[in-house]
Length: 396
Image 1 (tube, rainbow, N blue to C red):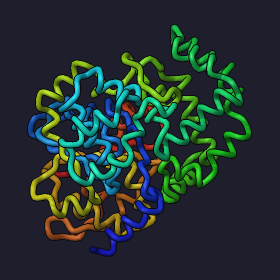
Image 2 (image 1 turned 90 degrees about the vertical axis):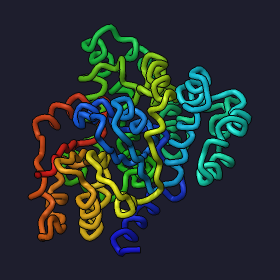
Image 3 (image 1 turned 180 degrees about the horizontal axis):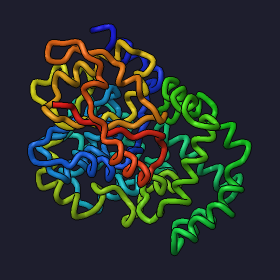
């Protein structure tokens, strides 16, 4: 295995430590779909995470979507969703992935889902399908590492600062002005205290959320007030500047479940039916690094959704260059790249050294950034947990 890939895998192991980290995606696919403008000839690579967004992209009917992740547990989650789309009716599917609980989950899994899954994913869910058991007293969305932190925050909300009624009033606000008033005057003073500021600065907290040290350094270097200041401004934007009515990201985080009227696109009946009718067959799951997958893949990719992966490689220039070499070797003409960052600047990407068309180049000289579009979309991001959003096209 090349050195760059070994380094990348070590970074992964430091953060994930054999856990299911992400039980839901924390990148807004509405922005991605507008940025990508997918068509019937597009082939998409996306880092799997929880698989929600890979399913979302299918609704624009690209030719294929390849979900790639080094963590086999993240691919196992997407494989379970794919099996559920194929084998379940919408009611049971929503109970499982919308409510995070399903009566008789193990029996449903063994009888209907397990036969449709690859062996590696079977091995994971054979041991862990009880995460969806409705008798365990909690939901799937309060499990895994990021889910465990969400469960702790909900305990803090309910038992320590006791602001659950205020949060409910936020969901039911009649206007953005009312929502802003409730947050600024009632919720923020009660919630955002010394303990929370201390908590979000802890490396252990950030590890639970899947944030590696290189990404923390990006935030600290570019954001006033460091991690705590950045998170405070994120929450201010989410709860004061953007309507919560369709913000399913924060609803599931603060309640442990989705609402039928506030949920990802794949959890809506009409879209579930489209996926079940054949769109889901265009999706593959791949347990590998981005570099490893692309070096083994034999067709061009026209759209790359790299999440915040560039931050992970910021302190590893050799690994960063090796990955971009693999990306460019498989990129279709005029391919488009999307990525997010904890910092506002990602010049380290531009400095990565590659060979392109037989000549040494720096990545930045090969990309045309769509800065205005990225800024406009980033302002509307319902998640708002990243300082930077990049859209770049490969210069023909």
